[in-house]
Each structure stands twice: as C-alpha cells, then as structure tokens.
Length: 113
Length: 114
Image 1 (spheres, rainbow over the protein chains, first blue to last red):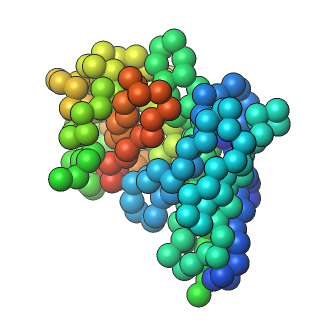
Image 2: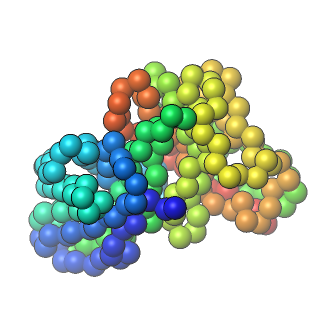
C-alpha cells in the first residue's frame, strides 16, 4: 500500500502568506521526512521528525507529527516566491531488509509575488 | 564536489535499445538507491544496495539490472527499452549505519524512449 499521501495536491498562495501541507501514511514509521523538489531538479532534504517527536522547527519550517492519526503537516511561514516547488513527505519504516524512504505524491506549491 | 552525481542528465533513445545510467556518491554512505519518478511526479523505489549488496528489489521488470561495483557507485542498466520506461530516474544515498539519516539525491536522469 502507498505511504505518504499528501494534500492538497496543489496550493497557490501570495507571498507573505503561510502554506500548510499535510501528509498521511499507513504503517508504523521510525521517522518522517520532508523534501523539496524544484522543477527539473533533484530532491533536497528539508527536515526530519522522529516517531517520538511531536513538533520540530527549522527556520521558517514547522513540522508536526501525530503518530496516532498517522499524519504530519509542514508549515512554511512568511512564504517567498522562491519557495515555489513540489514538497514531498517520506516515511522511513526500517525493515529487516533495510531502510527505505517511501514517498507521497507531493504537493505543488506556487507562491505568487 | 557534488555529493551524488548521475550521468547522463538527459537520455533520448529508441525502443528496444539498451542503456545505462551511472551514479556516484562521495559522501561515504553505505546505502544507495534508485527511484523512478513518473509523469505525475510519483516517486517509487526500485532498488536499494547496502555495501554493494542488493537489499531491496521492488517489483521491477528484470530488464532493469542494477550493478554496484563498489560502495560509491550504483549503476542502472536497462535492456530492451519500452515507451513506458520514460521517466526521471533518481539515484540517492544515505547512511544505514546512522539511524534516521536523510537521503541525498542526484539531479536525476530524464529518460525519453521514442
């Protein structure tokens, strides 16, 4: 089954506004990570939250994790046009065969200047 | 001094051909991956190697054969290319010995099969 389903699929906001993206997953995890992908580029790691953590901050990013609901959210405050990108959550469910990151379908964020 | 580098960045080829994509990481990581990103941007893991040993092999046609000559390299060879193989292929690496470590991705190889 697919892990990490994000919503919304697309989000368009004005510069200065906050952007919130949500992610749901299905199985137990060790940690959940958020990545960013600019058009035509590779994925860049943003932030990691472990399964025993509930909230984490990094600059303008705030991530929450609710393991009882199997969901996470990524908040970008005071958005900038340069934040325009696709954002993916990825779950790390370490298995006996080795860890893997399972990605969601992503949220396309557009920040209008 | 790129962390994870893939070549080529673009690859256009005809159906039926055989092609390879190369990946190298200089981070000292022990685990490398291949992911496929389709036109809808969905990322799906294909293979994972740890210390040159295959540890994850998802349901991928056996036309796809990964090869890891050493811990720093993981190449992907594709035989008899089909139209449906068109996608962006990403190589990534991480440190399995460091629990919960992040993955570093290459810039991707956009494969177009015509």
